[in-house]
Length: 353
Image 1 (spheres, one colour):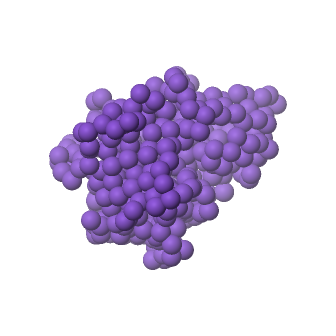
Image 2 (image 1 turned 135 degrees about the vertical axis):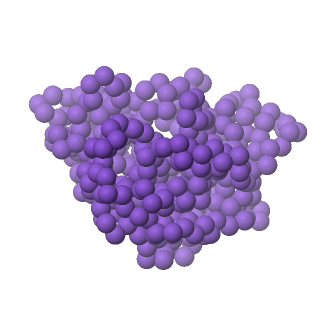
Image 3 (image 1 turned 45 degrees about the vertical axis):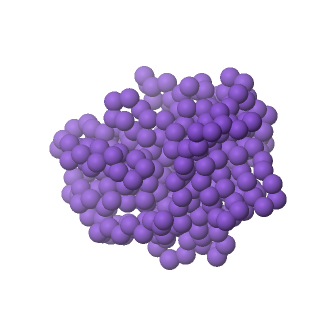
């Protein structure tokens, strides 16, 4: 199975967005990147370690299973050289696994993306996914992030035709000068660069207001192919806006330096080598040192980082520097303000590291 979804060009709405500034012209067409994909099949016969598991093949002789057993939740990776387990401390309730393979970074070799459906919200029924990106033989995790409403277009065709752009999407509150406040489906674009993500300079945040017609499209998708969303289609609608600046950039940021970083496995019974981490950083800014901690294991909120050079926020759940607990120490940052009435950490914009 491959994703080769083609859509019409993005049109720009005339109305301005209150949080992101006015709409921009010249938004390129949005198409899904062509990747080999496999949907996991749930296996009902337990083995020694897995009471419940869903498995999918990345290629011949290489497969990934999401397992839930007495020792918690983990990936079981099988390659010609053997098997290994990668703990996932908080994903025991996850349902749905997609494995995608292809040249994502544009260097002619294959990468493997493992997309795990980790939960669905009440109310809007937003589907949350964690994306883990490995090298082609699944020997090394290169990076990971979170996205809402994963599907064709979450890996988009690159403008230069080499590899894929990463489209991270989420729902966010916003406002329109004519219609007032509302809920928007937003997308940000990145390239895989080394073992991390790099925002694409000049590629604006795009968004679409959640109206009844859009909600009907979402509900139809939830009943379709493996319950996958259609971000390429949804963000190619005529009402899509391209924003002059990222809504998370406030213009009130202050200079600072990350003085310390600590991380530990998440979960009530954490594994030392878990892919999931809870992070705490100490930032010296504005004449004082502020400790910024992630929220509890049952809350999806994580410290939100951004790239100061492009003024583009990184995806939710993305940790620059990966699992290295000292990667961010000494990094110059611009620290966003704390929003009153919201139990959310401020956005941390990295200047360098």
